[in-house]
Length: 613
Image 1: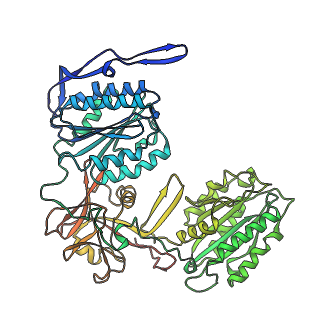
Image 2: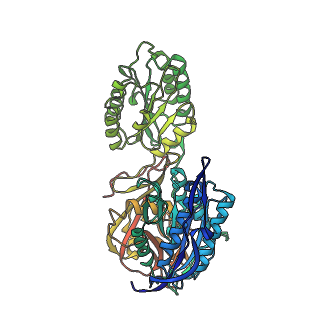
Image 3: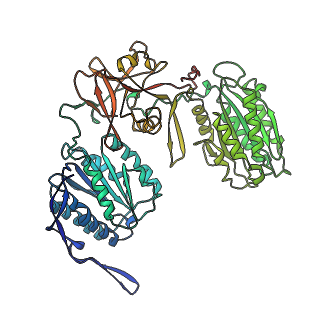
């Protein structure tokens, strides 16, 4: 990078802090320590034509207005003078004074400096409020993403916000911005390295206080200026997705996160082992309630020993000893199973305080192994008590069970004689832990079981989304795999993905899943990969799973935005752009690695379970 001359803003005296009668008073000089004029020459970075936005935290997370002044002075004296504003047009976002303030792009230091001072004065006058990080990124997308010049967009966020829920919610919006090619830099202020803010940025640095350390200024400047001169779209490109205000495609698949798994309970085909705590912690009344509840949601399934869309259920009880009450081979019909639930009260053991969870899990696992069938497998473990001896080794047993493809549900049954069991949920598969008295288990457990009944053959990865806030796991009926061997999309579309099709990527969530789980492994090191969007006549379409002779296609939706490089292009691919982002582009019949998917087995679809690889 070259160097030229800019002028360092003149510093006034820094603010003073005095303590009077126990009250801290911050005495700010005119313009909070900096005036917006240029007087002394320093070097700045050239060849840095980007559209830069700096988002400044002026919220209650900053602690007080003195810390905000420290941050703005650091930005104005150490950071912004690194740029030639004729090249690096810069906009500002200030958040925390009851709203989010957004400026235009400025092409000189004086204007952006004045805007920052004005925003800071408003924060001091109005007072600091809680900030909504999601709103910051939403306002950026609305006001700045599509304005400015045709240069790479870079967003630099400086914040002291550390609330995990706030950060994880905002990630939805940063992921969307990345698909549009925005490069995001995050400065985590006065926070430990363990902050979750790293999930929001392509480049993240940590400051021990409310300044931008000098070595970070150099690194951040290089991160920004690596994109100098890069344009968003080549002049010949044409975005072809329907606008958000248009009616858009009517096929729901066009804008779906993924292919939903069937929730048709009566068509499910499962082997379920119910493991029930009958120790002293579970009184007869508790067992009666559990029996009624369990019978209620199990009667929604088609209970039978034979037939394609049928479910079998077994019952195991445990206290100190473990007993098999009803095996998978005993199943005859729904009525007989319900009568078995009615017997649970008889197994109450008020004198036995033991809870041998490990032995109960071992018996359930053995039962599923020895009385196996074509069906999907699950264990529902209910417990009301915790016993250190009885839980010893249970975690390792649960891990072995889960590693062998069997899902474990846990139901914490709170009783007067029991204790809150914090260890129980750790035994469950992700997303499948419940509390009987507070969760809607009549609907949640059957829904969860249909999710388990939705699975992929060996050799592919099942698309799923885990919500870290609600701790719910949503699986989709998409089995995805990547092929690193470069091949012509015209040939791949004919038979290269059999028994599936070239993949659909119609949501940010699915693209994230692919970049997290396919690219680092099956497509390691690959910068481009072909997907299923193709031109059918004059329209861009995805392949449906029932596409035999082009008779199951659906149009592109709002995601991802397609860059059409030429009117003659027939195929599409994702191209890695600088930073952690991918552009979706049209192309000719050019060999590239490619992405495939097939429909998962689910309640309505008994698929071929032969391994794909």
